[in-house]
Length: 208
Image 1 (cartoon, rainbow, N blue to C red):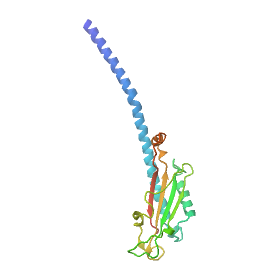
Image 2: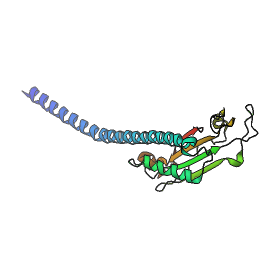
Image 3: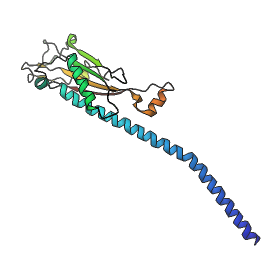
Image 4: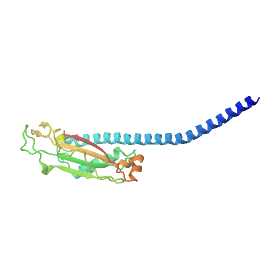
C-alpha cells in the first residue's frame, strides 16, 4: 500500500513538474514565434513594395520612351514631362501604402553629332538629371549607375528608325526610390543609429 501511495505521489509530482516545464517553455517560445511571424510579415510587405516599385518603374520607362507617339518625335526630356511622369507614378501607386512616398529621378544622355558607328561621343552639355521628391517621405533619389556610365551608354543603338537620321539614339533612365524604413523592422534599427538603405529601382530605355 505504501509503495502504491508513493508511486502515485511520484507520478503526480512528475506530472506537476512536467506541466510547469511546458508552461515555462510555452511562455518563452510563444513570444519568439510571434516575433518571427511579425518579422516575416514585415519583410513580405517590404519585398511586395519592391516588386511594385519595379513594375511601376518599368511602366513609366515605357511611357517616357514613346517619343514618336507621345512627344511628337521630340527626344529632349523636359521638366514638365518629368512632372507628368511623377503624377503618373502616384496614380499607379494610389491604392498602396507607397502613395506619395516615392521620389523620382529621370536622366537622359545624348550623343554628339560627330559620333560615328565606331566612335560614340557623349554630349555632356545635353545630359539631363531631374529629381522630384516625394510629398510625404522625401528621400535623396539617385540611380545606382549614372546615365553616362558605360553600362548604360552601351544600351544605345546606331539607328535611323527614330527621326530618320543615322545616329546613336539617346538613353533614358527612370529611377524610383523609397525610404528603407517602410519596413517596421528596419525602422526599429534606425532608432538605434543604424542607417537603413533606400529601396531603389531603375529602368533604362532607348526612344522609339
